Amino acid sequence: MSRLANTPVCVIGGLGFIGVNLVDRLLRDGAAVTVLTPLRERHADQADAFAQRGVRIIEGDLRDRELMPPVIDGQQVVFNLSGQSGAVRSMEDPWADLDVNLRGNLVLLESIRASRSRPKLVFAGSRLQYGRPATLPVREDDGGEPLCVHALHKRTVEEYLKLYQRLYGVEYAVARITNPYGPGQPKGRTAYGIINRLIHLALADEVLTIYGDGQQRRDYVHVADVADALVAMALSSKAGGRAYNIASGAGTRMIDVANGIVRLAGRGRVAHVAWPPLAGQIETGDFVADISRAQHELGWTPRYELEAGLQETIAHYRAAVS
Image 1: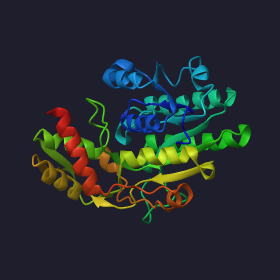
Image 2: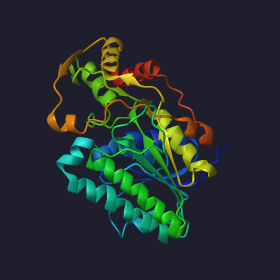
Image 3: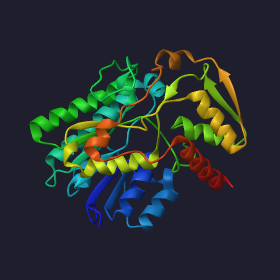
Image 4: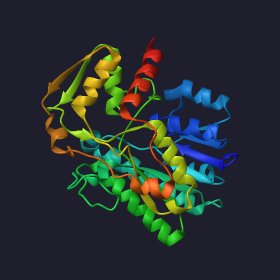
């Protein structure tokens, strides 16, 4: 029997891309899952499907100081996958990023501090926190300067977590997720995740636009591997107060990914365009993560090679649109 069987677990952002994959994994483990979502009707089909499997769906805002305490009290684990996402978007609207990603997490931490159950918090960070890496692969203790507001706010939340652990004993772990892809992308939300976006374009026989020469390397991780890692972090006694790179540990050039998608999909074509000024200004350059900490401390290793992951993901979305 799974160690999560009948365990009360809350997934904030549980109807988003990573969220739906995590909730599915938690349900297979027998957990008693609550999902907090800001707008149920935006993902009505997925919400109804989860509700039929016993998930408690709560519509509300993480920033709501009246709502959050009763949502959190009684939980044993809280996964926070919510937030304003996107490097460029955070520079275009820094106030929204500030309000959602900082204020929201403070409300959550205060709710955990005041709760009787004192759940462990697993927070979704980002590889953008490292800025432009000086060396590869990037380790969790490497420094770096965030290049966008979104990355800076993710790093700031980690400082909040350390403070609340030190002062109030709040238990937490951080998943610094690289570039996730795979099944489960919410309908109409193809902008999240470059691989999923390119797959949707290819299946529609449209142009896959690549910035610059496409030589920039990224570390792409399958969303099922991300879900496995998040669960491992929730269960591991070694993960308290620790940050982990959740990645594949391998770097792949963007142009190779795009060409591979066109080859496997049998549709679409690749085109190069100049970097938009803002996107070019905050571009981090090559990124490959060192995942040895997660492997050694959590016993987690990604299962998906990129080629197999692309094949599965393309087949999934092809079936979804057929």
